[in-house]
Length: 120
Image (tube, rainbow, N blue to C red; front, side, top):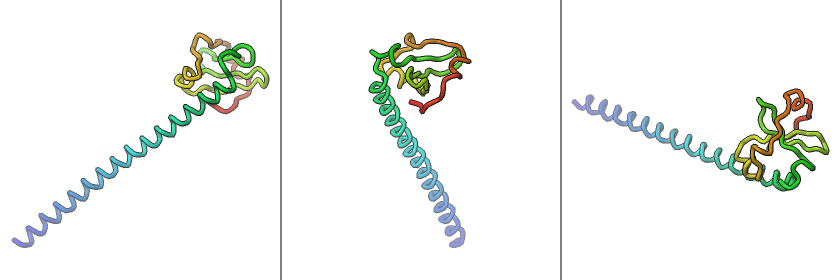
C-alpha cells in the first residue's frame, strides 16, 4: 500500500514537472516572438527615417526613382550612383510617403542592370 502511494506521488510529481516545463517553453517562445517583433519594428522605423532623409518625396524623379519589374519588389534607384536599394515591405514604402502609383515598371533586364545596395 505504501509502495503504491509512493508511485502515485512520483507519477504526479513528474506529470506536474512536465507541465511546468511545457508552460515555461511556451512562455519563452512568446517572449522571443515579442523580442523579434520589437527588433523588426525598430528596423522598419529606422528604414523609414533613412528613406525620408535621403530620398524625400519632393525629389522623386530628380535624384531618385522608384522602380520594379512585374515580378520584382520595389527598389529605390539613386540616379547619381545607379545603385538600387530594395524596399523590403509595403509598410516602409508607405511610411516614407510613397505609394505604388509613384513606381515605374521597367523590364527585368533593366532592373538587373543596376548594382544592388543595402535594403531598406
